[in-house]
Length: 417
Image 1: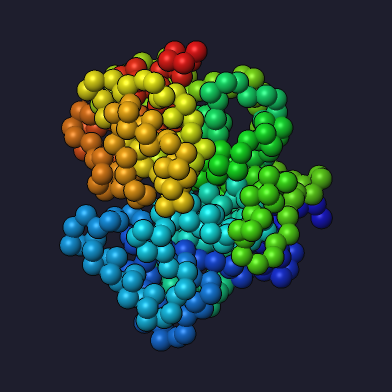
Image 2: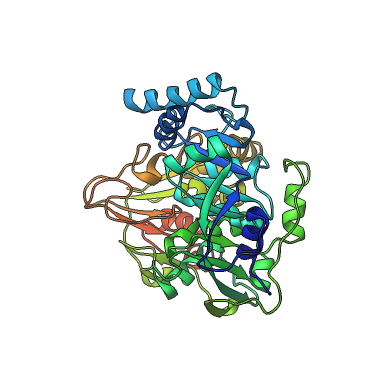
């Protein structure tokens, strides 16, 4: 029987042939929790009175670190204490880690064919490297701590093909926002999205991560990009253990098939209050108070380079705040060594160490009533980055940087041609 990537991975991990709609128990390669979701998982796990499968567990404090208050300090300490008590080697302290999804990929936990779960909805990011990865709850994470197994309902798959050559300033963020704008925030509900085509093959691993990261914003269970030589090259000297690339079989069955012409795609923006509320950046023109560059969606070195190229020799518009937040210590160090921070600083930006911070409206850039922010993050729901009367506009690093200069949301071509 011809099978999709999701079906093939779940068949391997369940040690049986699986079909969409079937509920199976499958072996998980890694389980990740962060400082928000970990404490509840720890409590549930310790109630089981069982040994921890420490090699499968990854702990990454990232949402409220460095700690913003006593409550967040207590959460972080609980992670630290759990790691020490159970000798969890894969614990990434402040100063050595970063945003959880970036760390999972950067440190080599993610590879093609793996089944990875995380107590955070954007765990689907790892599909960019050909893994089946999905978000779970804290109690489910505790189960994986103890057993290394979890039940899954095998999802139907959807195929999205983008062929052709992408235009200037069009990035992975524009591709996934265009798709979400097309199918809606429930368009891939509990399905596995496969995103492929010549335009996708031309993208960096970083841009692919952006696409998979936002699959959940269409309701997807997973968002997988077929692994190729670029993934193999990225994983050289990085990946933990062995892996095998998994590709869909010719003739595999899909619940829906969508095709896009790359040349038709333009820089876009998702307006409040849904990631599906998409319009060309050139048509938005909204004056902004803040521009945010970072997060698990677009805080990698490639994203910072794109923004720096636009900001070089230019200034952030008076009255606009530009926040630059690298996704990990490694990205931070790269940006520093490449001179990107000098460009950002000269332009008038504020530069932070890695944290989730403002993405979830936690701190380090929270919005006041009536304020508008153009952001490379992944959600623009009511109150997502601050007050319920603030507004978040989702866009690529190129659009965010150009908009910071213009003082309003623009297509990058308006600033740099």
